[in-house]
Length: 398
Image (cartoon, rainbow, N blue to C red; front, side, top):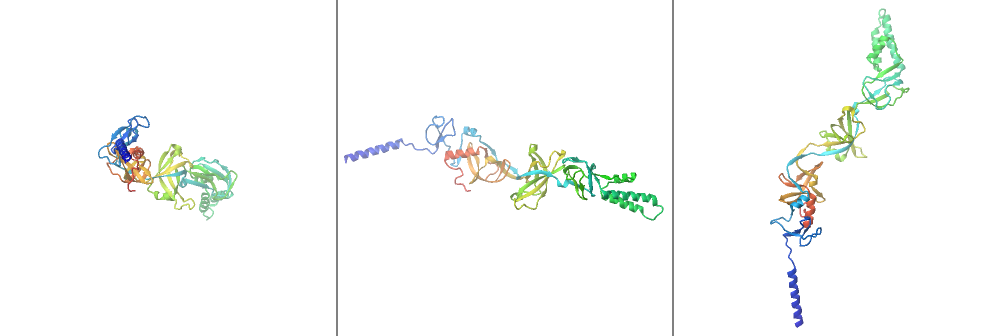
């Protein structure tokens, strides 16, 4: 019995000593290092980085458990900047891959009016520039030569028999003249034929348009049928930027969109244009549509085949916008950090909207006058998790 009493007494003394040595944790105090303020502990000790004793810091009275307080040094080291929210504007922008092409409305196909053999081509290379009215090709045509002879014969008969017959030679001459015009002779050529009275076995035809040679399938010595193509010419004063659009993007394409064509080969030079055409038919295999934007080409600096980007911008609308980096997005939603007091910050959930460039629209969750963290939001998020041991958005409605 005596031994039991002694053992009981010793256990009581031992328990009392343990209670005296136990330090009650103060929920309003944390410990940090003046040299490394990112270090935060909830009990005394040494800094794991510089090995100095940690300094106790009292939380301010009334500090919200959802808020985060930082020192001036932490804010400076973390490059945390804020700004007061104001209404701004934002508009959608769709970027499409494109290629420059000929403006088909300004291409000309020069075809032969008569059947014959091409004796000479005045332009023989692709890319040659042809001036309007310049000689294009020379052809030998029996049909055209016979028509010339008919015209000269009508002139001769009028001079020889006009006073001795009732035949209307003027009508015959006009009929032969109209045939020459129909087969492509010009008024000056007919005037020269009338004056000289001699028909050359070959006839030179002149270009009725100006442009660059884009197709040349005929060679000297080749026979060409009536209506056969001699050459195709393209005017490069305007070009088409042809862009591919997926069906999911078609809702963003309309005739009211401002089209800007960006040219990577010219240091991303931008040219404003207008949408000329939206293909009403979608390729069933690729689910891709085609749009064309017409752009001016002064000096013909731009060439078909060059790569481009088509930027379609919708009209601007008033809205609250923030830099994209100010919004933290994950599978739970989107959050931003508000400054609620001096060096005090709180995370709130927002509803993001349209994103354009480096700006993002905030549809709800913010109002004018709120002070928002623009840079350093991810650092605040990490610091909160480190200090509080929880996600700042835990418990919020998503």
